[in-house]
Amino acid sequence: MYDVLGEGFSFTEAPRWHDGALWFSDFFKHTVYRWDGSVFHPVCHVPGRPSGLGFSPAGELMVVSMVDRKLLRLHDGSLEVLAELSEHCPGLANDMWVDAVGRAYIGNDGLTRPLQSTVLLRRDPDGSVVVAADDLVVPNGIIITPDGTELFVAESFAGRVSAYEVRKDGSLTNRRSWVNLAPPRPFTSLAEARQHSLLIPDGITLDAHRNLWIADAAGSGVWCFAEGGRVVDHLDTGPYTAYSAVLGGSDGKTLFVTAGPPLDDIKEDGTEQAVILAAQVNVPAAHF
Image (cartoon, rainbow, N blue to C red; front, side, top):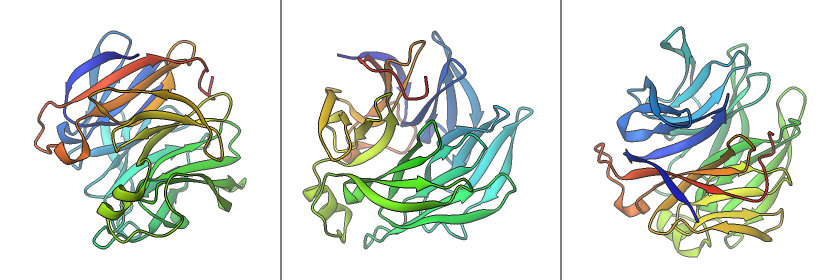
């Protein structure tokens, strides 16, 4: 079961639990919010549509600006550009994970007509931007293990999550399929991918047993998988489609879910159609 924690949003995504609070983006209200346990506070306005969130080692908010394909930082109350991503980023910039030293791994939608693979970028603390991995199909939710040794990325329209070993310099190696929820063949269109995938893996979060909780943008809720595909748990989100999730709360056992209408019914005009859900689970987050 779940509770509706907040309503009146347009399209919620990229939840993060940080410094005792829930942070998330609202695409079509162009706003990043912070929930302190009682009130939803607007944090900043992002004209280019906010998506992936993270925090620098100093605790400053970092946010992906989707449409103009930039990485921003909230510094002294104002947003400043940390990186221009468009040179390597053919599609809308999307989700992000920031590691313990401030490296930001950023996905993008790539080209979808026809559906083509794209890249995962890495922005280093020195300001450089490099291609961290390629041949990814709509790289979406991203997370790194607390010890910094593995990175997981959900490939939404390939129906899989890929895993990489992370070297000390932040480079990625030894890619493997962590869970595969679609036939092992490339799709040429979004429609074909949706037809043949069991799930559309979107945002992901990691628990203390190294299981991934995967939000299904196809509408079946949030699934907890062990590596290889064994189902560990499932949260049915009822009439809401889950687009991302994060484990947090005082004991790390609250699953916060950004959710809204089905993919085909999303309105991009700021219509209030999205919610934040919360549910108690039996295992804490890996970061606690």
